[in-house]
Image 1 (tube, rainbow, N blue to C red):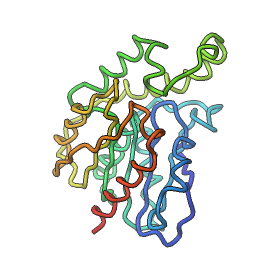
Image 2: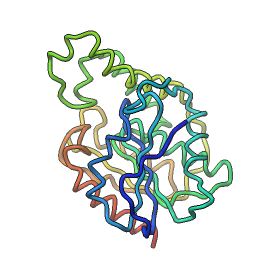
Image 3: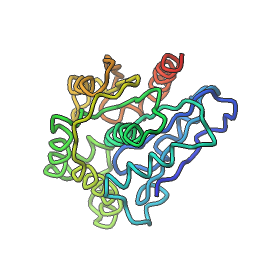
Image 4: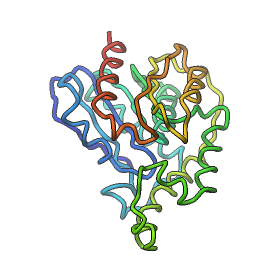
Length: 247
């Protein structure tokens, strides 16, 4: 089951923010955001089994079970503040699917779905992306996570340690099937790296087909790992988009 890691303690915050990490990463990916988010936002990072500090647990590779569990976790009857979902890379797919699951089951919808560095799933681009990563092997790993020292990649145990959670998330995505539904009637925000070699900025536009209101992608300097390199700018923009969504 997924769990929540509070990124900061903001009990008087007006809005909740749930952050889904990229493929292979744990909630620690978002820890640098703790000092960047304003007190008006109570943010949580999603911790999945098999990733990060939970890497010794069996990985989740069933997309339906994952989205069901995420929807249940987020739909908190004791906390009815508006909330938003943010997902980077493969995390964006499950932020979107969780929003659809919440709607499908008659639960409260997010005020904002913020998606980063992933093409929309309805045209098969996500499957092609994952298949390309698998085909390229270690050659594409640095594009996905940033530079990895060569000496680490020469040790089989280290390679297994690094790759196992990524492979699990790729299997998770390959098991996901997109089913046509009406567009989501919630605010959409799109983000990407201007020099992302895996997801060129023009591929972000396809998400507009899946929401009632279009969004123009906000691009930051950098590649696929731009949220780590440009966290302050991304968090500022996300905060602005949240403020617009809850008005």
